[in-house]
Image (tube, rainbow, N blue to C red; front, side, top):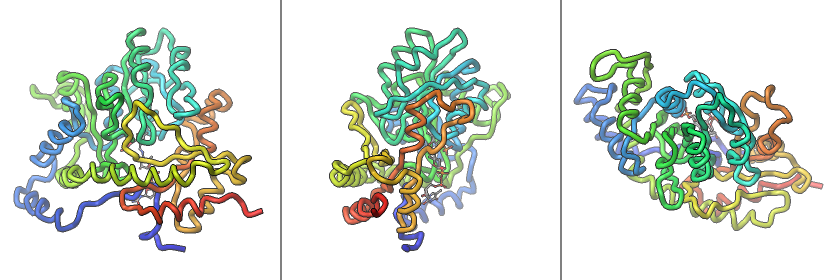
Length: 365
Ligand code: T4K
């Protein structure tokens, strides 16, 4: 078995060259200013805003805090329609903000919220929709925004996986009332831990700035807030990775193409269909394993590959609040049982992809 260092992993954090990190650390040390909105933080916020085409952007400590603070700022205190096929952070953040998540099923092809199901889940208590852009693609933002507009609902997109994604050529953060991004180390762009809210207007941004700093606004203590700050060293990592993010996305596009070429005709393996209107970021390479066609279920497939030093991952093997949902959302249950994300990162070669595909095998008969 390969060592952990050499293992191909579902997410391998890209790290800046140490010699590039050093001068930035020396500057931070010289200033003696390591947190609380220092100059590196402010520069990262400005540069991200420009890179993402998101004029009103606020950095946060995690993607979860970005979601939570955005939900509070949008006043999502009633029922919010969301997907059960997501990382628990989506649902936890809504609940921590005081909202009541209401689930509906997903599209079997994109694995993201089904717009028709959203319509049927809307009640007199619904105040918002919280769709999730999964795996580097995008949910049907045009249709969701128009449903929301018709019903007077607010839309908070969980854009944890959607750094730099576009829809019909527009930044994904242009849609809805707010989008929450994650900059966790497992994400295509990261600050080790971190996140950001991209919001539609400067007034709501000012509210997020206050909420992330204990509710302290320009005129003093405004309201209940928390500590959701990103520090200077994290911001420095972000600035250095921002310099190379487009190289990373381009390299991953190649890896994605190699996978598609090799797995196109593999019995029992289903690839995510292309989304012609979406400019992806290739954050993940999800496949679905149909046990009857492939001869091994998703769990056994991941375990067998791990024995060979290939750390694929079942994302997401359980539904959020599974006990309450059993049997109600068949497409989401099927996705949870069958979806595997294969290793993808910009350092992978064609030979690495070949190795993963060779190990992606049914039981020997
Ligand atoms: N919304 C969605 C849809 C999300 O997916 C997430 C987070 C959020 C919201 C919330 O964002 P944050 O608050 O986390 O910013 C990981 C991440 O911790 C989590 O950020 C991410 N989604 C989720 C999909 O994945 P785990 O428990 O699967 O991570 P872990 O530790 O098992 O690592 C996954 C893989 O990455 C392994 O193969 C090892 C590799 N890895 C990981 C780390 C941390 C490394 O090689 N080096 C590392 O430093 O949750």
